[in-house]
Each structure stands twice: as structure tokens, then as C-alpha cells.
Amino acid sequence: MPFDELKAIIVDQLDTAPEDVSLASSFTDDLGADSLDMVELIMAIEEKMGVRIEQKEARNLTTVGDVLAFVEAQKASEIAR
Amino acid sequence: MYTKISGTGSALPENRVTNLDFERLVDTTDEWITARTGISERRISSGENTSDFAARAAANALSSAGIGPLDVDLVIAATVSPDSFTPTVSCQVQKALGLAGATCFDLWAGCTGFIFALMTADSLIRSGAFSHALVIGAEVLSKLVDWTDRGTCVLFGDGAGAVVLSQSPNPGVLAHFTGSDGTRGSVLCIDGIPLANPWTADQAPSPPHSVIRMDGQEVFKFAVTAMQQSIRRVCELAGIDLDDVPYIIPHQANNRIIESVAGRMKIPRSRFYTNLDRRGNTSAASIPIALDEMNRAGVLKPQMPLVLVGFGGGLTWGASMIRWIPSSREGS
Image (cartoon, rainbow over all chains, first blue to last red; front, side, top):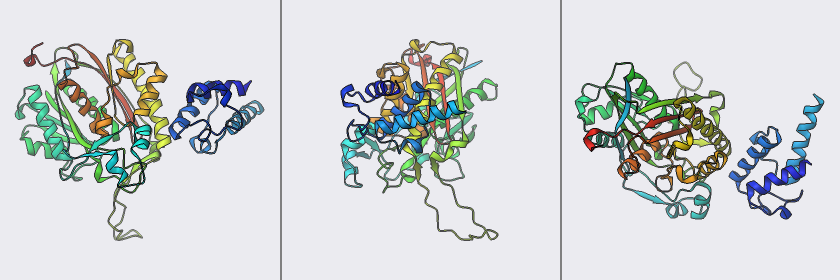
């Protein structure tokens, strides 16, 4: 499941409890990430989930659900191609 | 023929500027600066210019190497903040120290400048053309800082570091790995003089005031990737296992970058030598200042392999693997 995979990366990168990570969680408000934590998180997602997220796109991804939707959309467009 | 670092030196402004000083200058806090950068104070010039620090650092490096001014036949200064476009910082150092027999030029490669200068001097000495080079990194970035931008003004410091690179029968400089990517140059900029002459539409622009402009998140991502690649590749080129390298001396930009690299490469953070908490980011000067501090603190032992690694504007990046061979004068 992509959500479980994403959640594991978030827990590892942000040093947060798994039960605190939901689709609605805001990285900065709920999970305590600052701007540099976010860059590191995006890098880890790129490496572990095989996607490419430009920094200007990454700035719009404020919740866990935003990231999941972005990753799934990119995977779907790859399959379509 | 090989080269080795036969002496080190550095010079810093007396003026210490703490995070609390910045709380009075811009909307920031000590806690914010420390958490995002690891910097708690930096040295800022209250009058001396880049060539002044460069000359003092170079003089210290010469006495550490035990050689005289007339033994130096090459001076390369890496800087993005020279006193003037010409004469260069290296020529001003020549004048200040009486290096009458030297060929002098400056080299611009952002914060990677010292690595590029070391590589250049190493190649020129090994070609047989030169014997003793002064390789200097010197900056007065406070001339180029936007003192109203709380995101960047807290990051930088002034100062200079220098090494003497000398001919050696044994290899003291083992390998270099370098790279550049001009297509991503816009993430870290210092503008030059705008083009204006009697034939351009804009004939008399207002006097330029260049400042450092940086997309911090893009630079962070670039730095973490470039540092890992540079460290790995220079180990391969030198044929030395990273586990056998006691210290990595990184460009002192941001503690978070170094922690991220350490975590990703599974290298203990303690093997990265840092002084950025006290010095801030001194661009091309940061690696030779750190090396001189380690040398004077007695941390460097004979035959110890060391990785120097930098990244910066351009974009540019690179690493050098050296083996520490102290001057026989110091008794080895």
C-alpha cells in the first residue's frame, strides 16, 4: 500500500509516532517539520518511491494526503505512457 | 613528482557577531537560527578587506611551512568577494608579503573555490612548472549580504584560510573529483555590474549593489546530493576506503546539510569536522580555515587521510583526498 510505504518514510524522517500520521496531517502544523525537514522528506520519498518531485511542486504539498495524491498521480501517468 | 600541504594558516576578523546581535537587526531569534543552521556566532569585518585577511592567512601558512616569501612561485586565491576586479586578491597578497617571484591569479568557483584552486595548484606543480604554491580562500561576504533579508544575512562570515602546497617525493595530495552545472546556476546568485554603455538602451544605471540571493531549499537539496557524490567519488579515485578516513572537512555552510549527509551515508557525525557554529559560512575560505584550526589543535596525524569537500554557486562541487605529511621541520 502506497500510504503505508509513505507513512514509514515520514515516521523515519520526521521521527514521529506512526499513530500521529494520517492523510489530514499537516507536515508543519501537526508533525513539527520545518522547511529543511521537508526537503529531506521529499528527497527520501523520491529515492524510496521512485518519483520525481520538483521543489516548486513540493512547496504546495502541505499534508500527507497531498503527497500521496501527487505520488499516485505521477505513478498513474507513468503507467499510461 | 607529487605535492603535499606543507603549511596552513588562517585569519579572522576580531568582531564577533552573535545570534542575539541579529535579534536586534532583523526579525529572527537565536533559537530559529541555531535550529536551521547550527550557527551561533560569526566573525564580521569592521574594516579589513578580503586581501587583508588573505595576506595574514598566507603569512601564517608560510611560517607554518617554514619557507620564505621568495620560495613561493605561484599564488592562487579563490574568492567571490575581491577588493577589486583588478588588481586581484592574489596580486595584493604578493605585494603585501613581497612574493616577488610568484605568478598570481584569482579563481572564481563560489564556495567550491578552494577545492578548484587546490586542484589547479596540484596540477601546475606536478607539471614541473612551479615548486611552492600559496593556495588561499578569502572572503568578506559581509559586503555582499542583504542585511534586511533574515533568511540569508545570518548565514555568512568573513575571513581567510591558506595552505602552502609544495613539491614532494611522497603523495600528499592523492585525488580530486570536481563538477559543475551551469544550468542550475540561478538558485544561488551574486549579480555582476549591469551592462550599460553609450550603445545600450540603459546608459547610466544606478550604481549596483550586489547581494547574495539564494533559494535555500534548492541549495539544500543540491548540497546534500553533491556532497555525497563528491565524497564517494574521491574515495574511489584515491583508492581509499571511506571507513579509513578519520575526518571529512566539509564546506561549512549549514549543520543541517552535514547532518543529512552523515545520516544518509551512515557516517558518524563526529567524523565531519565543523566550526560553523563559531565561524558561519565563509564561502571559499571555510575549508582552509577549518584545516588550519585542526592543524594547530594537533588533530592531524602523520599519514592521516582526509577528505576536503565543497559545493557552491555556479553550481560547482568537488572533493580532494589528501594525506597529511607534516613538514620535517616540525619533527615527524
